[in-house]
Image (tube, rainbow, N blue to C red; front, side, top):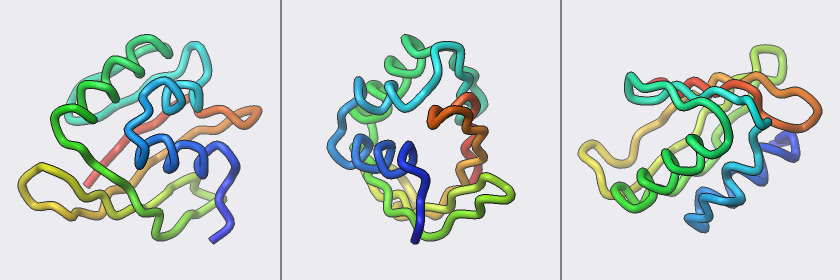
Length: 105
C-alpha cells in the first residue's frame, strides 16, 4: 500500500507508543475528533494520544488508504473491549502534516 509519508510516520509512532512523534505528524493548529471529544493543537493531541497509549496500549495496522477521500482504514488492537477493531481515519493533509483527523468505527 502506498501511504503518504505522514501516515507511515503516524503508524510507526503509534506502534512504538511514541506520543511526541505522533503529535509531530500534525500541524500546530490541527484538530482531532475521537470518542466524542475534540483535541485542538499539537499539545492537546500529544496529551490525548499519550493518555490513550497508557490506557489502551493500541497498535495499528493500515489496511487500505483512499487518497481521493483521504480515509485510512486500519486494524487497531489493544487493551480494550472488542479488540481488534477496524477504524476509519478521516484525514485532511496539507504540506505533509495532518490538519484534521476524525476517527470512526
